[in-house]
Image (cartoon, rainbow, N blue to C red; front, side):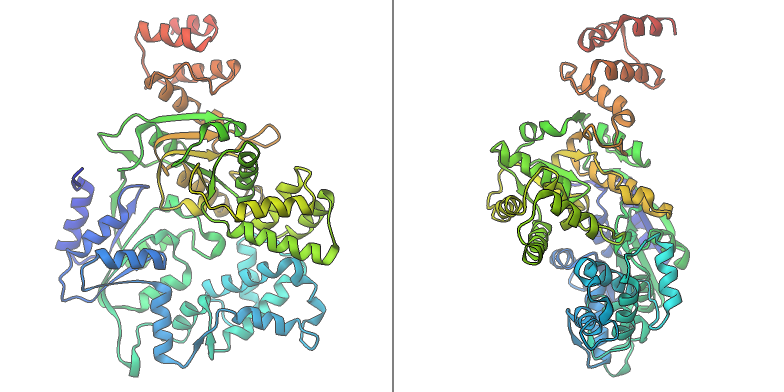
Length: 558
């Protein structure tokens, strides 16, 4: 199928070519953000020095193959590292923070009395040090770091703040080596950004920024510093897909760029990916997305957790809020002898590593002992601690340490690509599939619900939006199990869309609802003034649904 630019895209290209204003493109899921930016680079005179900032290295490498030769495609981190190395003799050391923490808590270290904290909270400490760098907290600014922790609504386990603050001080003052988080931190703090070898200016006339919703404070400052006076910033992002606050991204990143540069807003809200019923479902969560005129109706249905192994097939996605949920699903596939594969088994490896550490320390463990260890180790509000949640999920099924190790080994040794792909919401971003199963459970995450910062809960709604908009043709909401609270994608919120998509697709013989739920759904349908039926359609729905005639009698009186 040949690609024809939409009216929105044409307007964006015209704005880039004919004006010199800063531009911020507000784009929806599947609207062609990256494609639009790439084509936008062609509207800029090739004599200009142009930078295309990508979200990660793999995307930057792929863009470099497609972009015009005069466009430089990089991540902010790789460019920041270049500036650091042009202005200092710093060497890359990815273990810098770990080495400093080990030194602080060693027998002769300043914080040796807190060494026991490392056993369960090492990741929390390194994450907090990373957040300090992302938010450009000065070395020795204890008040600033405490204010950051409070603003994020984080309750830290004992000792975590003290170790993290000391580690931040030591690493922020040592420019002899540099780790990933410090690339941007030092480039900004030392005013190296935009300065080339020998102190010469090394800046850009035009900067294109993809995934602008995911920028952190350090990245915003960095981009401002490497833009020439009178240069242009052209950003593109989807505020609805901002889901990386936990690692330092600013939840108001789009607003920050708009305000800082006085950028003109341009919409790009027509999705080329999703069917109409899926767009309707996405708009129930966060509005604004539009289906293309030729989009098919599509399907939105509800299924139970226990139906997954039977209904999900090769090529399908199963998307969960946490790795623990996916592992519970994976166990069901293993028990039923059905193929599946994990998109990323890093957290499975981390769970196995943590289990091995516990067994080495405590010996073989019962499911109850593992559950208690998980409860003690999962008090962090910085990380989801998916490795701990995986162990807790398996322990809840009565598995001992030996059985859990056996199950984790099976998952780590999977070599098949058959069966559905199991992904977290963060892992599915940027991907799509014809059929997608989204697990409603733990969405929102219970820690986000309790967090006093409303921006944290906003990100849960964004995650629901990201998850459902991975589907091109068919979306299945996997209902939460009986002992779980209703979530963002609860049946009551999507029932009308589900019923109407079944009706229009001629699938009223499927039964995603109980009879009682079906009656509630039909009442909701009848109250929706935008939906009309003729007499034959009324008879078809009444006959297929088994709903009571009282509802239809009431409808006839309206």
